[in-house]
Length: 113
Length: 152
Image (spheres, rainbow over the protein chains, first blue to last red):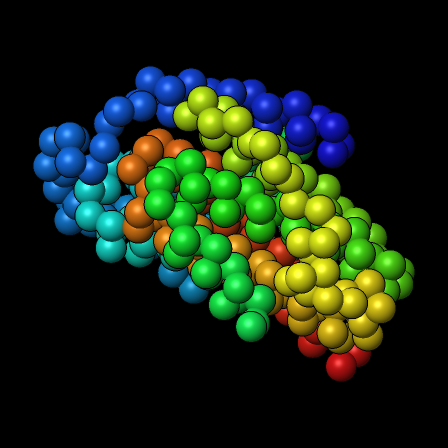
């Protein structure tokens, strides 16, 4: 299972690395002004009773949004939201009596059931 | 110096994207060593958890090294036992509570560093990977704190 996760991750990492290479040279100063407020307003914010899939979708949205944010403070806020959401997923699993950490990347490399 | 202060200083000293990612890589590599050492001081399910998390830290390190390769930055130095000893001396000989606390502090320090990356990294696409790593760290932290609460 670990080997499978690692293989799957290498695919993810490769895609991200390709994206990074494609994005090389794009810096804070060069990118067009991004409406951070609009990006932030569009992010899901699961409430206390949210299901694990809802939380995982929110976490995915935070990860995807990070490079779109122009202001450092916005990025820090979303990085914190990602950490908090991942933690909530783990806490929910503990409350349900299941394994809190299923993969190395908070669900992004978890094998499909 | 505390673990968090030491790690924060290493991130603060970085002057480029490569330096920031190398600081993050160092923490993950030390994390892998710390979990492996901590496992020796733990028993049963907690030992198995530490061994599994050591593998996760290796995966985090591999992800960050991939990011550095994408920036065409070679990694010339990897963290070793001396780095672990400097940051968390005597971890393998610590009590169960000391080990769990030390590992939790290291995870928190890594997450603090990821926030600094969110603030300062200019290669913004790399933040997706950093966020996945911080998600993993956050889940480790929850599991460690849960273990600390049990039987204490």
